[in-house]
Image 1: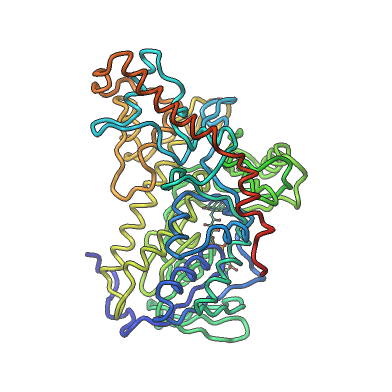
Image 2: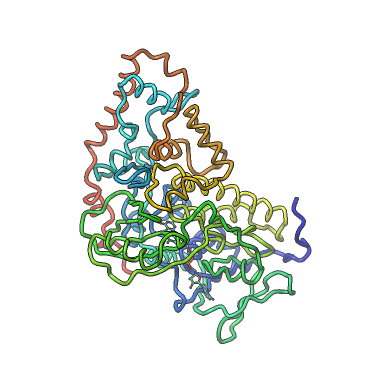
Length: 508
Ligand code: FAD
């Protein structure tokens, strides 16, 4: 039990007045979830400043967003039409293992597992005997991504996420939240007022003097972290020794091709570039390490690798990869960039916002804030983000690239012990075990570890029980099933136009 803070100083009495500071993706997702679920019990106010604006990126998601929308009863067509969204089946990593090499980390399942051993063991045995095709050929979502196809399938037979327009998503969620009673206040927060120098937050004072009081404050002010960082002084743990990228340039281009059903992640000399296809435009950006490349070089790299003319000058963004040591302190919970940011390689930030608000619902104070709830919230948040961090570090560290100082640094840098163990386990015996509540499942780790070039030295003996004919038939049957379904899928572009074309969006 953590007794760093005086429990008596946290508010007594029921928590009714919720103040959300910030109206980016985090602020409006929190507003939507709290108002839809507990709006009848709460008085929710969101403060945002149009003049300050939002970070303006964050457009690729992972399949958990589907679940989040189901919890809120959000209509998928309406959401996709309103945010000009497309479907996402995974991420294609280009040049990460070696220049010219590419692989897809898809959201699907690959092959069929046995309870003693995952499919990779049977596939590795098939490879040894020369009867197995590429690992990805046994995964429907991966093959659909390669062929630019998509359709919803019965019984959630297709695992997918979305590419969305972040600005339109905030507008969509604002409309949703206001229907459930959220009050929006426009204005710049000038000060965060505490009950005592080292006390709880009592109120926010806006430019012009308006005071907004509350019982519980949600800090969604982005990298500024006005409440958790500046007012409550919760330290930030810097992970840049594991995650070398600390800057980004973002720019949009018009669509020049059909929208792909996957994000492209293209490795460069000192970082990587994203391409996120939406219905009406493409989001692009370069994530890079300022230790290895200048801002000018980064800009030139990005601009020389675009399809179509940029719609505006690339926008610079600076960040420090890491996490607040506590994301809930006293009567303030930080969600979104205010709580920490790893980097966007696996599109996990919006997922962490969802997790943050769902966890808040699960630990929501009944009568008063309990320190044990705060401790549990912080423990779970840390556990989750550390697993994601390890997964991201894997992409940088396990590479054959040694063609630039950046990649030589990544290959040789120290990595977290937890990740060292994962890599050793897969390298030595082909095994992956998912930790409880870990976001990325076995198949994600396997796809990326194989994709980055790890070849397991051995695999489970159970696969040897099949003779050559049985093993070939087993593998061929899975591939034939994948191909049969694949052949029936329409093109992703056509499906999007018919299912959720932006012309179908409701009037604002
Ligand atoms: P912001 O969008 O910065 O919002 C902060 C809000 O606080 C704004 O409304 C602002 O006006 C308000 N505010 C700040 N100060 C004040 C003040 N003084 N007074 C009043 N209001 C104030 N995530 C993904 O899941 N997928 C991705 O593909 C992805 N790509 C990314 C790429 C980059 C380069 C970066 C940096 C991030 C990316 N993210 C991604 C993360 C994602 O952008 C964020 O998680 C998401 O946008 C949430 O941001 P936010 O709401 O916390 O902060």
